[in-house]
Length: 253
Image (cartoon, rainbow, N blue to C red; front, side, top):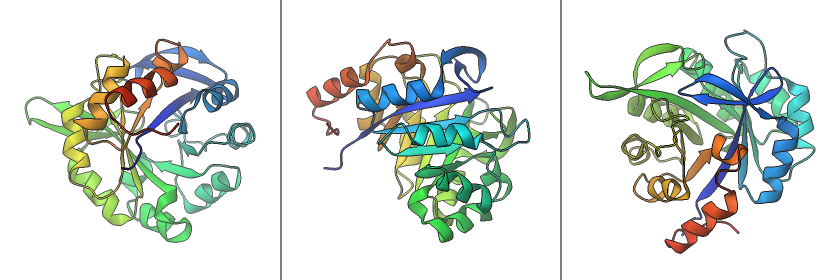
């Protein structure tokens, strides 16, 4: 049985880790390097660093911060935000990232997924999908530019396309659930995870250890990501893993 992964996320703006609700009302959560070191010590299986304002500010991810974090942790490290070229991917991987995450650029330049996979291997390419449910159309649609721009892409269809192009993993965030702490969007996660052949990381809505159990079992996710509940010590990574073990879910020690 493949062990499920618990991933800590650092959403960074202006050099500080921030967290909000449905991508708004951001509040400060600390220094990215200090938090990265803490999550490494506490047993996070992986770390995701997202420079959430890079795309809208039309700039690249801060390479210096990426380099500092990589020098202070031993767990796999994914970096995203403002990546628009293979050259930028290479720069971040050379700075210490293990994987790069594409979101807006992947939608606007789908060939970038294939180009990155060919050069670095699909296992290093993560496509991040921010999705919001449309009650009238009864489907989830992809948003870009930090959740500010809706596209006509249904989340499942885009996930399937991204995987076909070479993405080795999908980071699926429910914008409806993000920051609300009322549980992951299990139907969304299951809808995507059961139709792609690559691992899906569930994101958005974690509020308790039980929520991780739900999305990693009923939601069919390969991994679950959380931010605020870890940043503000509402739930610890060790508590989440203990609960998963109690429920018979395989996790890494």
